[in-house]
Image 1: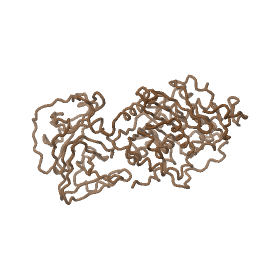
Image 2: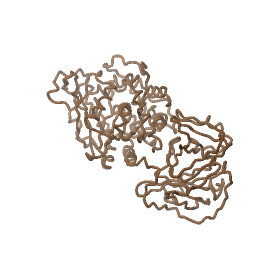
Image 3: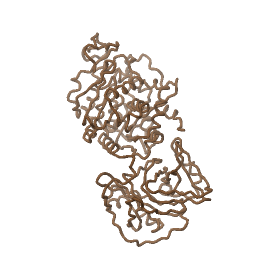
Image 4: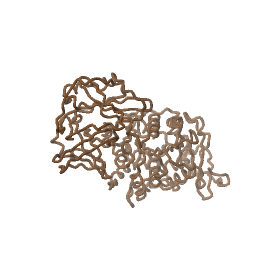
Length: 613
């Protein structure tokens, strides 16, 4: 059973920081009341009686880095706009923005994805960007946005979609994905969430007199154009959050000075050029065009009781699922907890290269669009069904093989035997390869020799992308035996790092995911034996899968000993739904791996291997 995440999603909501019609289908009526008109505005009416405005094309001319001709899908007489790039027959990438941005937010990502051969579609939500804009705020609803997205996908005949969502794009897009998981080949999220709110719960007080303008203070006014760091790791270091969600909802709805660009400026790491700010404001030449963008935050009160089924679908989603977070978003959508909520509860998130990007705020697409897009291309092009196998053909490691000069006969009982690992990552023709070298049977990883190793120096000497010095460690298995290498290309070469001789024991395609509790497939040909009568330590995930600790680490906690492991669970920050147990074995436990082992680490870098049937 997956844990109920009600309290978490309520916290997200409470502290959230943000933030084609035919000629005979419309008629011209007098312009709406607009306290700050820039011109006489034609208000159109659909055959269903919905009054709306349409931002004139001239406001979208010559926007920087935005060459895209727009296309439209008509839904209930209102145009849903989208930009498209890339080959018509390419795999579909659907990009969904939040509030108060529009598809212009993806200007840095679209070219990268299109050049990689994907058919890229960036949609504008109703009332935003180049989509039509009903003038009555009651025409906008959370379920209405979700329904329009479903119909948009159906009208375009999209299938096997690679979905990327952020902010309100996640609240809408993940609802649709959770209800229709078969439509989506992959799902990726940046600083977003799918809140589950109980029926009848009111997240914020209703906004009184929502159509009255007031001279309200901008909730994010204290954030400088060039942001300062908000976090130390996962801990906020700023004094409080910049505004609360209820204040933001009131400001968006009623603030006389509200405009999109001031929010984008406040919630991006880098200072936005003036021409970019003007582009974000282009869809809204006056307040008459802003009903949709004003209304979005207050739609949180429509979330009660509507997303339980969608969350259940999402937490059953086994296809690839990725989180890419901007690490300088001080709202709860930017928190480590929000990101970890997906990693812990969506099956397809296991073993994926989740990341928190530096120098990226809430609108990470603007701050780090190229990085996000390149990561998505790598994510989409990876065969996740075979990710554990080495996929670089004819890889020739720059580490030279040599003869054994160090000898150590490991004890017959390996339990608590000390060792270390040097783990370099190298570039090859079609990706990265990570190798694992182990000191066992050569030496017992002496303290002074191990401490003399410097990762940066070794990486420079070997031409590695990076090196992880994984130790010192202590075995918890009683016996470890290398199997005959059935189909393995691990040649067990011997090499010296510093003054420590080691042997190659495993290769991994890509880079080891260092996020605690993330599953890594490792190519391994070993038999581990845990003997009867010994105490073992297990983690169990919400699906009931068990992982047994194969070794403990003194890299993070240098004082950790084998005697401390009985009570280790009390000091671990376990993901929701995970448990830590100890057990005295009544019979030998033997784990045989002839191919892929599935390994996780806790936050102290203790390693566990999945117990397979």
